Amino acid sequence: MDKQKTLAMIKEISDVPGVSGFEDEAVAALRRYSEGLGDLNEDAMRNLYLRRSGPKTGLPVLQLDAHSDEVGFMIKAIRPNGTMDFVTLGGWVPSNIPAHRVLIRSGLGAWIPGIVASKPPHFLSEADKKAAPEIADMVIDVGASSDREIREDYRISIAAPVIPDVQFEYHADHDIMMGKAFDNRLGSAAIISTLKELVASDLGVNVTGTFAAQEEMGLRGATVTAQVVQPDIAISFEGVPADDTVVESYAIQTAIKKGPMLRHIDARMITNPRFQRFALDTAARKGIPVQEAIRTGGATNAGVIHLSGKAVPAIVIGIPVRYIHTHYGIASYADFENAVKLACEVIRGLNAGVISNF
Image (cartoon, rainbow, N blue to C red):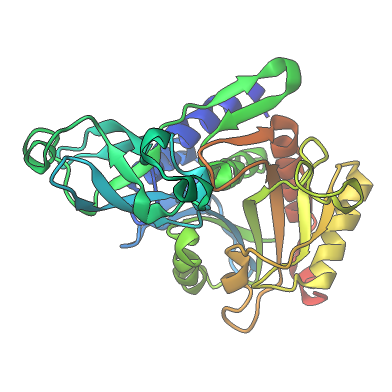
């Protein structure tokens, strides 16, 4: 895997806008990087399908899943003073939202910079200062002075999508990536890198990569992709919340720089233990660092994929990301690379006989 080319891909895929329901530009970027790897098509939700070249008749179908959307916002209303109310797309904690730059898409397709603003401290009562922030008390401000200016000059209307205004950075000295939308553009990039690494491999499964829309709004896109692909087995890549800065040391299960995370349980799936064991054994045999995790909350597309058809064995290969569902994520390129390595080795080891034992 060419590191510099892969980092360039991750940068473009991370920086491009694509909140839930408005994934068009993200899908266009994913299409460009997927060219030559197989047949590409989309559906009306902007789910993107990449069917690996050279499928063979009669082989089991592996769905290699990630999601293309990111958390963000949508303009709800325009106030007479030119500021704008908004709603969240995906799971945000209100205290993480204010005092950050955002970009709002105009009706002409331009991205307008703005700031998530709240009442300055000079105008707050003591009780206000102690209260938890609420989204209803925040606005997006682009510097306009009237609703007419917003509508006629900025060409912004209600339902306009809003993304964090963040640019990808890679710090080679410490192998650290910083940027937005690592949940789940890192997973989307991992699908492409995996299929590139497998180009010359003679596999015992046919592989279809799926870049699902609207995961952050309740796994909606994958509900469709699972029906279309009808997989016999599935691997979901995900940018998963790192816990190494937020829990006691004994409880850390998803640290950055410790390898991809294999999750045994979350709110929507108990991972197939036989497939999970196969993946863990493969990692041990190939010397790929991995982490195991128990999660009582959160979910991935595997939550709906594993319930499709007549039940689908599925695992989640998670790339640890600090501070997901905020403007900025921190992740390690080595974890991304090892996630791809693990997926490749697992896929090379699959065939109809192996899958039948899961």
